[in-house]
Length: 178
Figure 1 (spheres, rainbow, N blue to C red):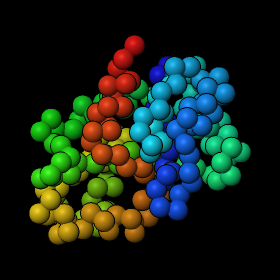
Figure 2 (cartoon, rainbow, N blue to C red):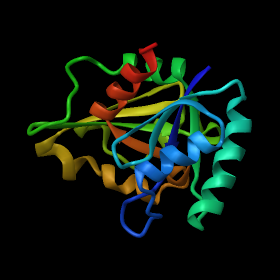
Figure 3 (cartoon, helix red, strand yellow):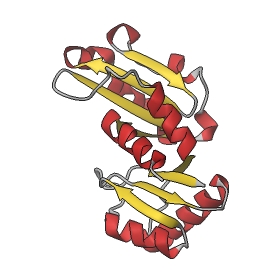
């Protein structure tokens, strides 16, 4: 089965530094097949016969051994990644006029009601839940008014990992490739 590993909080701020060539070698060293890394933010597409929970334990333990830090890793199936990307309206982009992001959710916070709990001002952004993620789009002129940055203070924030729409769509494309 094809999977995507989404590492949370690497190569940003004070987060763990994980070079992508080392990450690819680590996944290959675990016996995982067809390993592809994408960007420097911890996105790994690969195949395995193991289950997602087994892979999560294996990968997180090996990352800690290799990099000296516990790195939360979200493992999604290719079908989940594709379904999330397909739920994003085609006209939503990230560019000069707007930003679109996907917050991939760990299973313990993967609930439709999460959107209504977030401290954002929905009159200034479009936001919705899709199984496995929350997706939002903000026009640049409404960014500060939306209060989107306040989600970092929400209790669920540590249990999500965010990617821009371009990355979400590219991961889905990599998943769809045979």
